[in-house]
Length: 264
Image 1 (cartoon, rainbow, N blue to C red):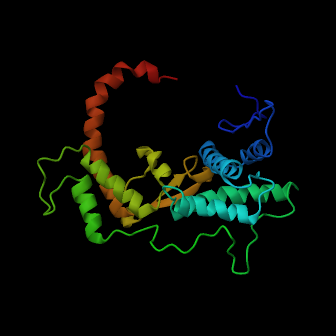
Image 2: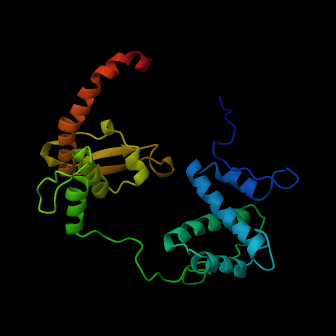
Image 3: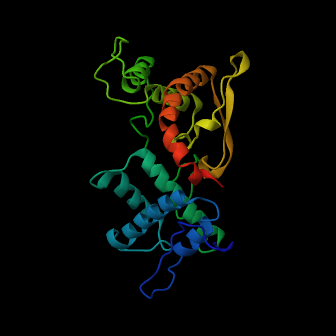
């Protein structure tokens, strides 16, 4: 059993050439591990390691994380978003910025630096803000496109609405109701992929929507509530009474034979 004061699993640890903990990154991630999970720690680690590698191996003259200037960070932004062989998109750079901003906010709070290398201007932007994107990061689906995805891509119908005998997919109703649940509720991919069927209630009287409580699967583990509309609940109910019932019946004999494994 882990000691209560032990570092959370997934906390990165940096070692220098002398095999001693390398600061400030080790101290920063020890502190950050109190607030974010392992997957977020991994993202922040790769982002800051990429910045440190650029400052020490690409930039001329080389520098380090605590000696960096605004011009150095601007050079890194240009390298990432314009000069490298496959420039990153706006969404990726925004994530990189979150890691950089978080690190330099921490250095100021700890007294390692008097202020952040990039200070915001009056308009709220700073030197790390990327130029205005020409294309939208998020594109909507037209109703026609949603119909094709829902009925043809997931449901196995032909564009005219008739069944496609060549469709080789499985669990048609499950896939269609799942798509409806994600599109209409605003759940994140991780939240939806970890949701159990038992956590979704049945249809409500008066065609009312139903609340679904997200706890550990929600972002940062902060509990929140999402709502599923009556039409979505009806689709899920149809799946439960048909496809899911068939799956359970097919697995009944095997599950009963292995029932001892499920006992407490």
